Length: 113
Length: 116
Image (cartoon, rainbow over all chains, first blue to last red; front, side):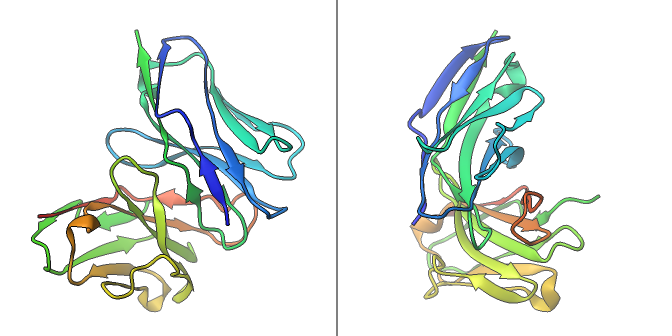
């Protein structure tokens, strides 16, 4: 069975600073994908970044990067140069065979001026 | 391209009543998912369709929940009868299908259900 753990219920960061959101996972599958989604207060789930288990390079998408440490089973999201609009819930998720996403409980991020 | 459409956006019902939600996926997306997101938690998969066949419904409370995807396009999720603990946001998502990197799931805006 897969399990995603996000240990930070809430995080604060000052505008323009970088922040790291933690995610650890547990799976016996060899092939899997790790995702991060953003959920603003409006409720929609917005895809941010993807990392495949066989990808050798850490994924980057604009201000988002994924710090993937396979041996430690961690997939932390790094947001650089935080903006006020980054305030939202952030979910780490995993997908393996079957394609459905298994989500963590989320981290609430608040960006302050 | 148009996104995933869901209706209604909000629904308030009494316990033991019935309710139905509708989802229209992105055109051409073979895979459709229904997730339940209880307040303060991440979404949990209820059911996954590939075209009009069920791939995974292991977490669907089948004594009260049912879902169908006729003609492999639109889908409806029904709860009958509703319980207080069914209060949640019901998210529909769709994807092209396949296990590759580009099998990104696109989510609809969700239906917020309140059971009184």
